[in-house]
Image (tube, rainbow, N blue to C red):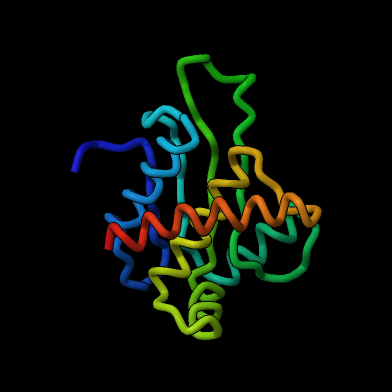
Length: 148
């Protein structure tokens, strides 16, 4: 596989097919007309770490499944194309995978997609935005299903 500017950092002992996640990220970048050189970090972590991040940066005193941190590029050289970081709690993802009766890998890919959509500006604060974000998520996950 060619060198990529999208890092997947697995801080857990979960066995993840990073190749499938990388293909999904590449597909989302192409579909959203972003450069393949765009820098994104996906950090697979635990409940304690994501709880700490959620409390410190969002004022929510609980673990969550995914948090996205945009990089404010106005302070960076224009040739750097950085979106930001997506943190995913593998523990939460595993709970949700069990609840939805899907493999952990599929739930992680859903959360990666959700996190990246937030990085590129999609929100779900109202029903219209929620519907659009869900439609995009399903579109990208359908691609991921074909690529298994």
